[in-house]
Image (cartoon, rainbow, N blue to C red; front, side, top):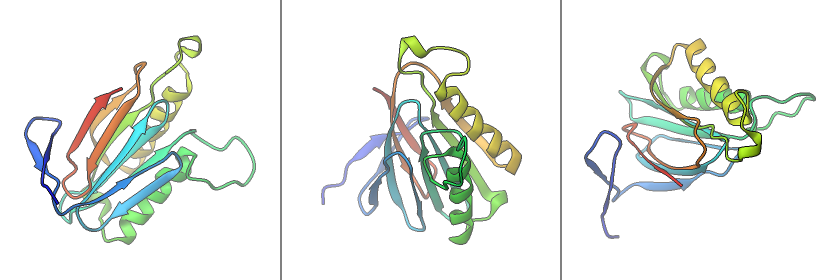
Length: 166
């Protein structure tokens, strides 16, 4: 396997050799107990990256809608369920809530005809940010909104990220 590096937010590069790779689709989440590169593509969806800075445990969710408007459907497509499950699975893997840090991405308004202050992407972003604040999890980066999608690469053990508008 050839080692190569990606530029990271804040400068510098991080080698990828020896890391597992996972790609998330909407409605998925992944928690890694060992160094993993987690990627996803976002538009109006939101991804929350959480990691325990002391234990090197991290994870990401990718949700499409803020909340289930009705019924008893418990799907990770909904932000309230995706946030709860991400925190629960991280804690189950050994992460401690006071040590968790967050990065939040996505929430774009991709279509001009849908632009308004309360578009779907804004609702998704607001749910994630409010949930993290309610839990007392420090948000070290929030790159939300805009009119373009994003490619996101997250390093589960360090919390480092690489993003690119698409």
